[in-house]
Image 1 (cartoon, rainbow, N blue to C red):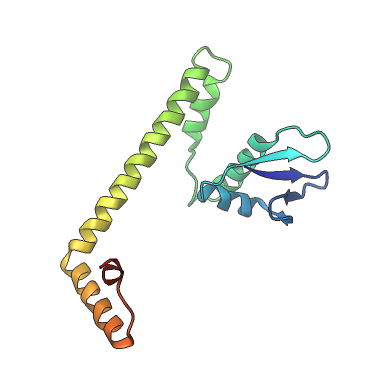
Image 2 (tube, rainbow, N blue to C red):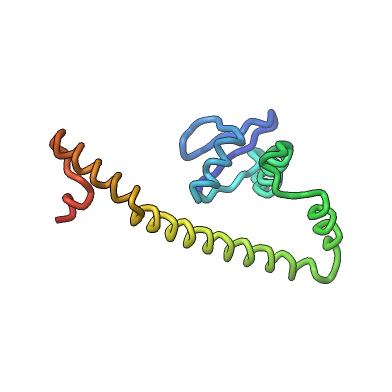
Amino acid sequence: MITIKKYPNRRLYDTSQSQYVNLDYLKQLIIEHKDFQVVDSKTGNDLTKSILLQIITESETNEQQSILTNTLLKQLIRFYGGNMQSFLRQYLEQSLATFMEQQDAMQGIMKNLIDASPMGMFNKMMEQNMNSWTGKKTKNEDKE
């Protein structure tokens, strides 16, 4: 777990890298599935959720990257304080995890289809020819 300290001047410090970082750096950690926690430098309070919300807020200001529509946000707000709030949290987490698993599986299928297509086969032949001219081995030749 990477610890990020947040200082009063709003600067973020990655203790594992010994350097100051920004929200884009934290976003990249998330993309790379690296676990981190943001703590207040003085109190040690966990500030991770507020920083994650800040990353989402910045992403949502760009209409091309926006995921959360006004309608969806209003519907989410209606669940706060209600008796279905904890159910919704679990449902959203499980739904998103399932969606991501299905997306990974679909990307694998598409890669296999592209590799097996005539164009994919042609690319493999070209790579093998280029490698034979330069003396490099292909991935398949390395395995043999």
